[in-house]
Image 1 (cartoon, helix red, strand yellow):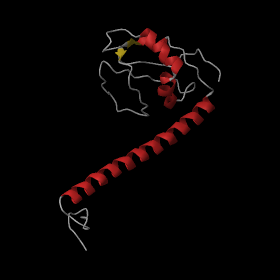
Image 2 (cartoon, one colour):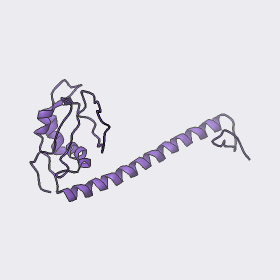
Image 3 (cartoon, one colour):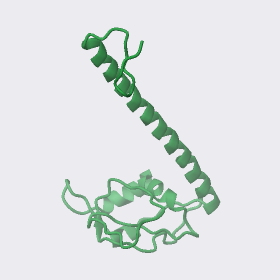
Image 4 (cartoon, one colour):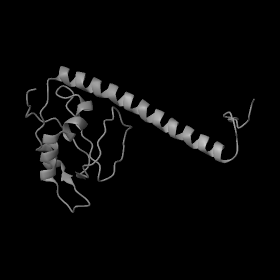
Length: 149
């Protein structure tokens, strides 16, 4: 992977961010208003795949640079747009970025499916516990609440 010193951020909306959570959004509605603690990064589409920005900014080397530039109290850490623009990102060629982003998209879909399965399992466990503790034996209700033999 070759490092790139080219600017990846075209424009920013808000003056500072609490650098804790990042996500990628393909499209926003017109005149979207953001909190003053939210920063919108608009990547140069011919230099970087926007889906990779959260991954690049969360990497160890980027995170160390960002933490060195933080200002504010320990409970409210912020970084200015100017300081964020100074962060150097190691960016692979665009075709590799797209491959990496595709892999992470696939991983995110799998992770979401696993989380849904875990939640369904928890709900089922609670339902069974309620049924067993309330004296129901061998009869499980259908979604409409009725019991059928």
